[in-house]
Image 1 (cartoon, rainbow, N blue to C red):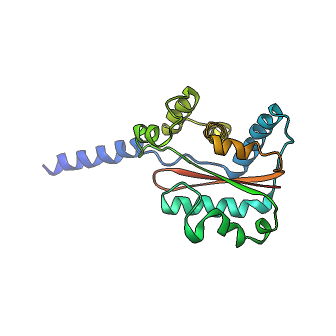
Image 2 (tube, rainbow, N blue to C red):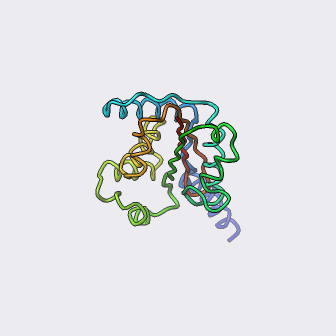
Image 3 (cartoon, helix red, strand yellow):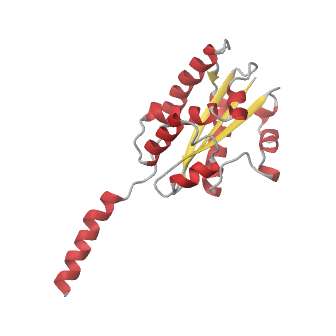
Length: 191
């Protein structure tokens, strides 16, 4: 019996780590670099000026992506933590005449794809989103594709798409933070 328990334990130690997958690793510099290429190509198609990554906006994007990960909730915040109140506390953002924020969450193994389809109305209607989401679910996206995944999610959401195509924006930054079940993204852009 003791020998059988040792075999079972050994089997668990060998098989279990192979079956557990952590959050996809996102390189913040690659994310910003690739997203800038993607969004500027998209803006060019709409005869808009390119936008530039502004390092001073990174603090806001990093802070909010981290807070969403801590809360396990994607969105623009409530009460004291809503976007308007957060920008008031950020001197750099507060001095900008125009500012906008997009938020997103990337699916992981612990979240069921069926729940994503329910919570994201355009998911089922778009095979590109469905394909990218399934690949994200399987941790099968490279750094460029992670940036593209977030872009496609926002492009297919009317209000988020408008934010990316706002003619007045000149600067942006983007950050991500994971928790146990999702990776959260925050894009902030200003005039």
